Image 1 (cartoon, rainbow, N blue to C red):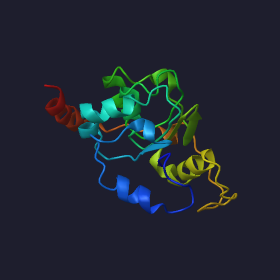
Image 2 (cartoon, helix red, strand yellow; image 1 turned 90 degrees about the horizontal axis):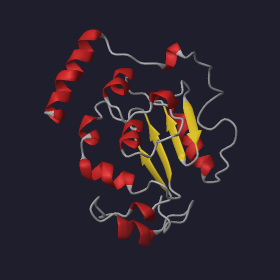
Image 3 (cartoon, rainbow, N blue to C red; image 1 turned 90 degrees about the vertical axis):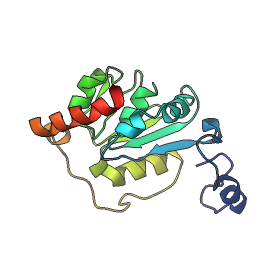
Length: 178
């Protein structure tokens, strides 16, 4: 969402101006909100120095960062999550490997909001969308896209690879770190 767009209204000038904007041309300060969707394999994005630099330029700005599934790890690397509570759907072994992840701030909840950051686990996509929309003042009612959510335990919201999957991840990681 750009400061140049009008919430709730299609702005043709905005669409024409930004439809061809690439990462090289974009200025993070032009946006009110940066939404980072998750991915099954966050490693290419995690080791994309231009992407991490782009995100990190938003540190300290009045930008809402909304990251779901595995993408909060990108916010960690860009130092957006420094000192902030967060949640994520990434496998916990990743937090052991990457020292930029502040494990002490990881919270076992579906959605966590801390200051200008909204993070969520992928299975809570509806609640994540609600949190982002509410942050910008949209009245979405009490049953937006669903009935009331269930309560989950800490164990149900903590993810680990099997030993063989973890070894496979470590092998894949070598391509990015060696």
